[in-house]
Length: 277
Length: 110
View 1 (cartoon, rainbow over the protein chains, first blue to last red):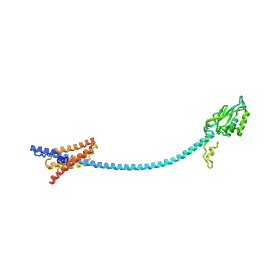
View 2 (cartoon, rainbow over the protein chains, first blue to last red):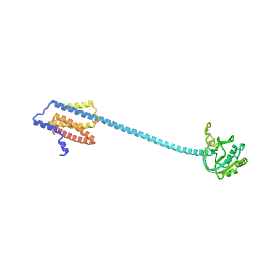
View 3 (cartoon, rainbow over the protein chains, first blue to last red):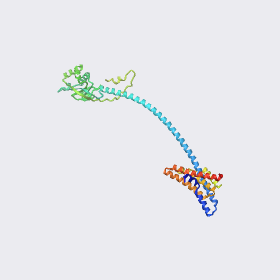
């Protein structure tokens, strides 16, 4: 039998038929007690309660559902708004970053220029280490010299001047780099440079053109004076090719009182910066 | 008469107290209501045919409700709750329709 037909034909609970058939068989007339009637009424009370509760619950849930839906829509709109805000902020930050990057490029270019200028100044003034070809000139006291025959600060200063005049680019004496502030000074029988005592023989390491330096030293007027002095005092003087030499940087004296003056109108900054050279 | 009064009292009680259904029983309430509706229409038809019996009505009412809810509960546990409740609703709906058709025949003698 097809399912739908079966369901349709057996739509009434078969128990009713069973009970009616049994009652007919026993010859009993259908008893109509008041009590069972009341039972049916109580069941109907339960049924009404069930239906009402289900309806109330459904309508309550509907309000909750629609509330949560509206809430979700609100949240979506809110988030969308904040997303747009964030995107605007992002684009602002990006343009700011672009501007800052451009400024950084400008500043780092200027910084590089200043750094290379500082390096050049350091090489020139003696406060930066240098490396290059050059000569080694050694000056020593004559044998058995004593007292006034010993090499004095003025002698070394004359030789230094002669070397600068001959085209020296950097000079160190016994490892002491000569700076724009360096001076030879007599202390007793010794000579100080950069406040450090020197012991003879005095070895001048000179960075410059090793091919022309000795010749220029001979031909320059101050070089002439130096050679005359050397011959007079009988100093031993020896010039040789020094190969590629590395001259150390002089120790910088920290500035305790001097400060950088603010740049003034009509007074270029370079005038104060390179005043010592 | 007393049956209609009982139904009215139930509805009023439900409206007054609006008891909260536990969240766990929430999905089974509509199915239980449909099953109860089937039992009530079956009873009405039996009454009109003259074979109504209180005991059968009480037993069929509660057993219908419990079985319908249990089937859907089992379906939920097995992951076919939606399909099973659809099947229960279809069967109960067909029964309700044919019972109502029978009742109509008795009432209007059509």
